[in-house]
Amino acid sequence: MILSPSLLSADTGRLAAELADLEAAGIAWAHWDVMDGRFVPNITFGQHVIRSLRPASRLFFDVHLMIVEPERYLEAFHAAGADMLVVHAEATAHLQRTLAEIRRLGMRAGVALNPATPLCVLDHVLDDADMVLLMSVNPGFGGQSFLPSTYAKLARLREMLGRRETLIQIDGGVTPENTGELVRAGADVLVSGSSFFGNPPYEARRLAFERAAD
Ligand code: DX5
Ligand code: ZN
Image (cartoon, rainbow, N blue to C red):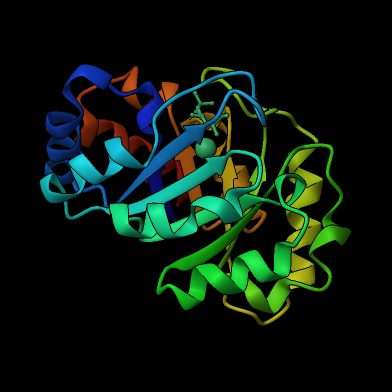
């Protein structure tokens, strides 16, 4: 299980120090929630913030784009230092082309689905994605409650992927309490914002998630 703490719940005024603390706590990934105020109601940070923090961290930058027409910004986030770009299927008219372009630029490509979006939108892009992100809350805010309908969707996605090495990421309301069931159902990467950052120290919190995943 890979734990990807969502920086949305970190102390935004001291992001460089937060990234260093994550690294010191044995964390490997950092999840950046980019929001545009259109695809979701909230606005967070963009490519300039990520770019300014890139030299401060060796963490794998997992960038979740909650923006309309993400295809317009792929180059910008690549230049900013993203290792993986995750786009919402609901936000782009040309999902296959967008995923292929992310890979062509040298990044890993991910596709995200809102809770109400059916898995069949993935039918013809399964080989174009390195990761599928299932939203387990409606995106836009940290600290929301996990939607239990995610479990059945996750099990079904695991079946659909067959022998592919595609990662499955779950995002929204993830805690050590639901981690075990998510990992057993086939989740590979868990995003946690409020439950992770709200319960320091970070190394102990990482261990709590890892123990729950065993
Ligand atoms: C929600 C974001 C999530 C969020 C998770 O729109 O995509 O990554 O930060 O936060 P928690 O873990 O607090 O639900
Ligand atoms: Zn996210």
